Length: 171
Image 1 (tube, helix red, strand yellow):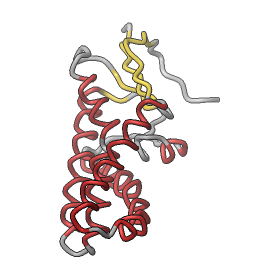
Image 2 (tube, helix red, strand yellow):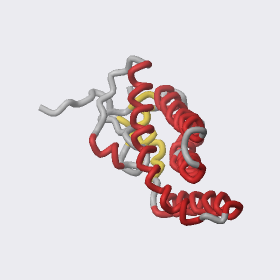
Image 3 (cartoon, helix red, strand yellow):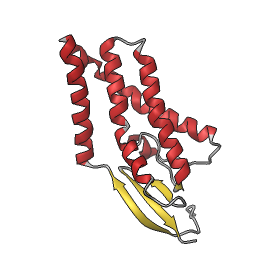
Image 4 (tube, helix red, strand yellow):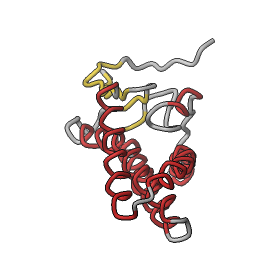
């Protein structure tokens, strides 16, 4: 039998990250790379440094798992969460709003600090790409955080593939 909850939920808000969001991310990323490539004049090095972006989803996933471990939460993750814009933060059941906020702040700031820390040891083009990618990959998380502060404190949050659902229980 499938695990079920005894609560029923009312949808307060669903935040979807679709093509306009992806285009915003792409535009911000290309703008950041363009401004960093203009002074050096070595745009081909920035193109080869795009391979470092594969590290960012891993960092996001590990930071989310680290927060779950330190918060001693029993969160069951879903495999499709690895391929969403929240990079590994998918859960089977809705989580509390405070857990959501703390996890998102941990992942957003942690990935930025790790990329800035690695910037010192990487070649310039790789460091710029990693730092720009950390900021751009955090945009959906930051939008979700801003929207979470407009919701009642007792609501729950469910991670979905390309959206967040803010739910309220009836009991």
